[in-house]
Length: 406
Image 1 (cartoon, rainbow, N blue to C red):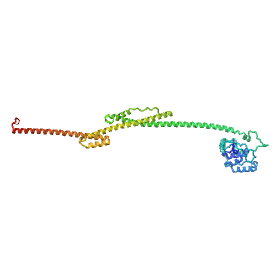
Image 2: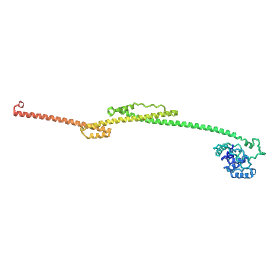
Image 3: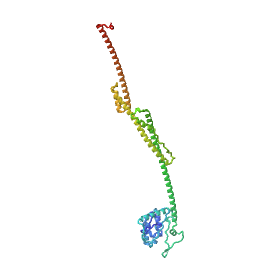
Image 4: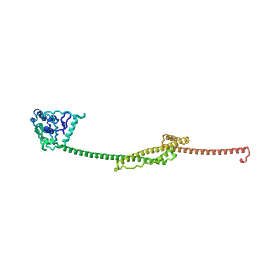
């Protein structure tokens, strides 16, 4: 069905009309009141415009049939010819009188009508015409008039009858309905495939996220196991008397006895996406717990080590102070003081050993010197006593008579 411009009363020709369609329409008597639109169509050829001017001046009987379009412009497929609208009451060969504009909403425009016409013609062009090529369609002779009435043959095979009774519209409706059903079915299939693809992609993403979370948990668990082993050995090898603060040992012992949350579920590829998401969330929570425990365990281990070092430094500093003047070699104390200031465990241990050895050597030397002095003092005392006795004897011998001197 051809659309009519409500403002001008003229039919709206689709800009997609081919030269074959324009040729057939020019030879169609029903389109003669609108020949100006056909001649001014973008696909019209120069000979058609000249023929139209001749028909305007001399009439269609004198102008004859419309000229064929150039062979280079013609198509090879069958075409559909839009049916002509009812002509205005004008004389043949004259411009149509514009019909009064009908009342229309403010947003109704010629552009909208032109778009609708384009859609109609596009639908018609998708249907193969059962008639012969446009180039072979002869001009339809004007109907015989009897007074002012126009009569047509009742023969269904008559081309004019087929024009008056457009049986192809039913076929168009059937084809368009079938096309809509096919398009809807195809759209549903595409939507289902798209949904399935998105579900598959979501499942693969869930598997990847679960595997990544499990790998992270294993890495943290491995680091925690190594730290736990070192902390256990440190706790076993350290007595309460070896640390400055025994509470650090108690805190480390409590951390080593803590339990880890058990993980349920797995990252198996055959698991449901929702189960994979729950497993991933559980892995994230467990990994966070392991990280916190690892941080606390490292801090507790460091606290014990630092407390042990504090105790070592305090003992070494006390040794330095109490050995003042009590070592055989004073340089050992200087070395010990430097190690205490740097808090170097190995250097402190070495310096403490040297100071103790020097202290022992000094104590041994002092003991030997004391023993020698005592021996010398005893010998001197004995010699002095003997000399005193001798002197007394001499005195008695020469000064008086003593039996013991005889």
